[in-house]
Amino acid sequence: MLSKDNNLDHPSKQRVLCLLTKEGEILLAEKKDGFGQGKWTGVGGKIEEGETLEEAVCRETLEEIGVTLISFHKVALLDFIFPSKPDWSQRVSVFIAKEWEGELRESEEMRPQWFNINSLPWRSMWDDYSYWLPRILKGECLEAVISYGSDNQKVSSSKIRILT
Image 1 (cartoon, rainbow, N blue to C red):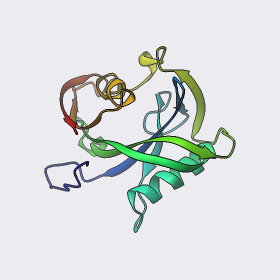
Image 2 (cartoon, rainbow, N blue to C red):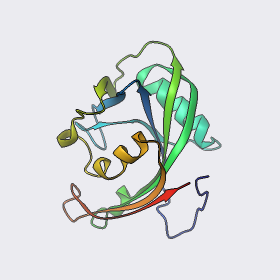
Image 3 (cartoon, one colour):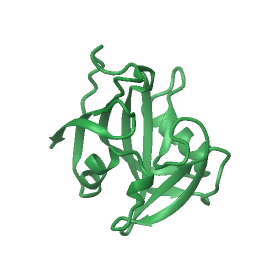
Image 4 (tube, rainbow, N blue to C red):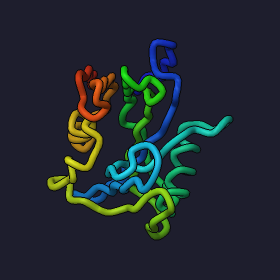
């Protein structure tokens, strides 16, 4: 069970992230504007007032790539720390979805694409993905604190705790 700790030591911005997976592939989306523009990432974003994490991840997935989640579960709780850009710091709840309905579509914000899990576009992804994504693709659940360096591009430290 993932922690629900909302201690004030953690970033106050709460976000959700969803990764769709199927037989050796993962869906990533290229961020077309705003925070993370040009990077390949999962789909997700802000939690609206009164929404649960599950409601937010369903809404964001529908808005960004046009599919309705049917079966999904939380696999990680990630605290991202940006010491030189504190307003970027955030707590992200990560979900894996294995069942959905609807046809993938590009939105104004995201361009989705399937990738083989053995040939991901690492150089065009946030640096932190290499620390946690392979682990959750192997079925691990985890909590992590990931700090970025002064360049806001490379991870300077990470603390990962595997959950049972």
